[in-house]
Length: 149
Image (tube, rainbow, N blue to C red; front, side, top):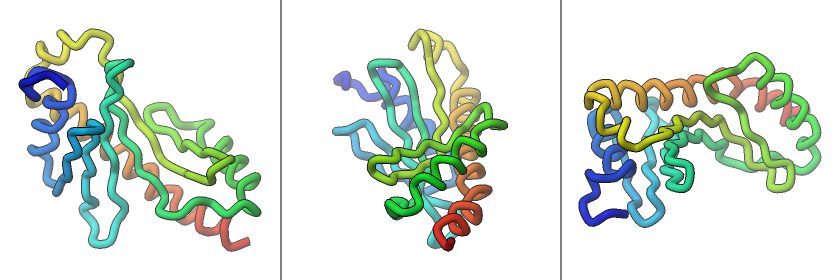
């Protein structure tokens, strides 16, 4: 991170997320922001800066790994669910059982971030965050049913 956190992508991310109607927790050491759910007891969303690709990624991770006996079925479910998705996808690691909804924004040139009006940058991040939360919510029942069989 640069000496002035507002001069880098993580600093801009934090400044933007402070403007959304959610509680956030910041971990500058790993360039991660936890965005609390609007619903009581809801799943938080992680916002991460991937410096090597100049990207901001949003993850809504299921609280418990998928048990081993359901992982093949979960892999099939995720493959079918992702077929019609474009801006956010489900991501499943069959080895660990970790399931998440994921969305990202790639900034090919960080100078473009500086040229964006602040309101546009906040809106872009907010929409990506909402996209991930909506996707996780849409597939919550399907994943729960999968684990019930």
